[in-house]
Image (cartoon, rainbow, N blue to C red; front, side):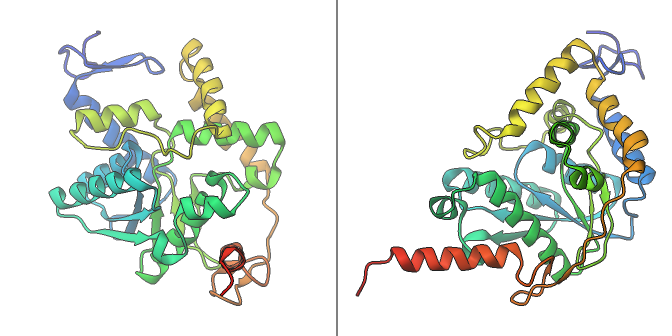
Amino acid sequence: MKKCYKCGLKGVVYLPQYRIAFCKEHYLEWYSRRVEETIKEFHMFTRESRVLVAVSGGKDSLSLWDVLYRLGYKADGLYIDLGIGEYSERSRIVCERFAQTRGLELHVLSLGEAIATIPEIKRLEKRPPCSFCGQLKRYYMNRFAKEKGYSILATGHNLDDESATLFSNLLAWNMDYLARQFPLLPEGKGFVRRVKPLFKLSEKENALYAFLGGIEYVEEECPFAEGASSIGYKKVLSQLEEESPGTKLRFYMDFLRRLHPLLKAQEVELRHCSICGEPTTGEVCSLCRLRERLSSKTLSSSPSS
């Protein structure tokens, strides 16, 4: 291992894309500065903002909450219990311990109480679990943030997530999705401001921050994530990264600098859902339509009296 770039002591972390090594102390310092610079560069929020961090119990979201706490931002957490057996139970406990040891506030929202658990929905829906799970989380995160008066919703999306999503959208030429893919989605039309402060940091860099910072997190992937197309895209990009360090960051940053400014998202006319009042393009939002399908399927499968 090479010597630390800052102090000259033996390094414990080497970042090949930057060709620098760090000791434990200076890696944590570099990571924090990287997040702070990203927040300022994209004008995500200030220290006066009320930030709600969506936490899952994994390394990315807990690293985000930890670094915001250490940087002095007003950040609370929101854990959405998906009802996926022992996996969700362990994830919730890890988030609760994280908040308790730092004196932070964690909100817990039960999906089972709000609509239904992911396993319950999976038994009734033909779609892959990741599709409706992401939809449900986005809906309830935004709604909860508004109800509790948070102006910012922060997620732990990392460079691997964002570059894989970009790769997927480019392969399919999903122009609307490409136009909306950005580290900051502004508030308005029923949405709070959504930000991704870790989008320049890789999954590995977040894992190193969590490990060196002594953050307990759930290492296993969601049991329903197996077979997701995003995993395949991440493998392809990781292979390119191995051969040419810095590929993922260049790929995504060049998209933001060169292509994104040329894309103009079509102005989507939004209205309030006639059932729940949340923003939607139709008369009834997708979540309320899902709720109606679940209700009808449950009733139809019930034994007749």
